Image (cartoon, rainbow, N blue to C red):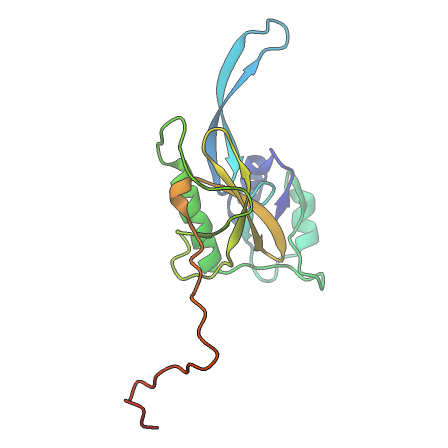
Length: 189
């Protein structure tokens, strides 16, 4: 389900009140801001979505999505395929997102050093069965987080991760044009 960015928690609460199991993969970020009147520096923890604006819900198959959208606070629409039908993502994809969320919520030092550069192709370590395609490093935050652009749910999205959650994509060596793979049975076919 697509929710207003910054209102995802309210959307999840509203979905649960309407009897729909839902989750919002998120992590905490410490942010420092100056107060408007006093200009005093104030720090606070803020929850940020792994996929901002997306809440994952498991409604019953026979649910009326239009009626559900009217009742849910902060919901904009459901994620749809190009055909306009609802987009359902698999449990394997959700498990990868959950692992990324766990990694982002784990304690870490204030700044994490890494050697990643913009434009590099990377893979998610949490994707143990290699379901997701390789992503591209698009953004580098000062606190060490890395914004990786990956095609998910039919669109390109930036997922923020830590350096230990990605690895550089390994290139496969190209075979010679004349070489053939060896048969496992000793050449007998």
